[in-house]
Structures are given as C-alpha cells and as structure tokens.
Image: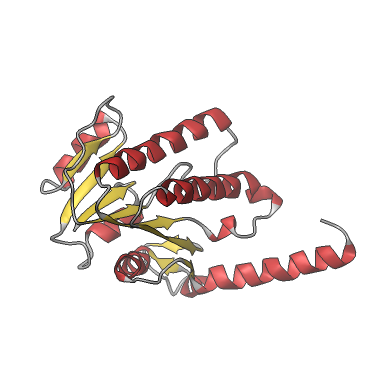
Length: 222
C-alpha cells in the first residue's frame, strides 16, 4: 500500500509517520516548496517526495491500494480572512489529489481528512475558519465521487496536544497527536469509517453548541 501524506511537517504527521501503523510502508510525502522538500528528504530519507510546486511533478505509478492522509488541506489554522490566498492554498492541495487520482484509476483509494469540530457548529468568531474547513471537505468529497473505488473518512478533533499535563487538569479531555494518529490508521483500515468526532472536549463542546443553538431557535435570537 502506498501512503500519501499532505501536510507532512505538521505535528500530527510527525506522530503518524512515527507510528507502527505507518512505519515501514511505502510513503509519498507532499512538499509545497523546495525548502520543504529538502527538509523532508533529510528527515525521511526512505520516503519519496512529491514536488507539488512544479508544473509537472512526478507522480507515482499505479498501485493496488493508495491511502491518503490529509493532515493539512487548505487553511490549516485560524487566520485573518484572506480569501484569495486561502483559495490558492485549497486549489493547490486539491490539485495534488486530483493529479494523484488520475494516475490511480484502478486503485482502491482510502482518504482520511483531518478537519476540526469547529466545522460542525462554529460560533461567529470561528465562522471564517470553519467555513473553509467545510468548503475543502465538500470539494474533496466531490473530487472523490468521480473515482470508482474511493472512500472518505473525516475526523473532527477538538484541541490537540503533545501530551496531557497534571498541571492542566482540562488537558485530560484533549486528544494527543499520537492518539489521533492511531485513529487515522484505524480509519484507513476500516471498511465503514465515514465521519467521527474525536476527543471528549470536542463532544462536550458540540453538545454545548447544540444547547445554545436550540435556545437561540426558541428565542428567535441567532
């Protein structure tokens, strides 16, 4: 199985690439620029690097099974609105996946998109960020619909941390990058994984948002 990673220098990807579920498999890491390609080659010398910024990057040959993990797709973190820049980033990343699908028409394609629980019920302060998360998910779903053997799993985590801390009791509710990496691997292997909320804090937050939305609906005050 070929495993393709978008956002290979994120903390989630670092945990994923160190996990037993991925270690030793054939890897294709997507680099967004030459500097990132150089760093990836130094850290992961056994992995192939896809040079996304080139006009005609070298794509892998046909495989039987291709796993794609989108640790970063489009807008990664909340940011000040910049529709043009963020649209370019989304088109770039989706273009990588479109090119990959064109070369893997006969393969089984397993895609995991790591989104955010904010995408499910954002407040006004998170609307721009959450809107982009929903946009890229919709665009990715439409792209995969054109492939005869593609399936998508979307994960909606809450706060992610390197490790939980006794000094911060609330961190017991958070998800570690290592734990999320294990969830990604399970989704790649499962036949029925579609969408999943990850983390106790994410579930509690979404429940609270549901109460707030119900109250607003009853009172007529959005």
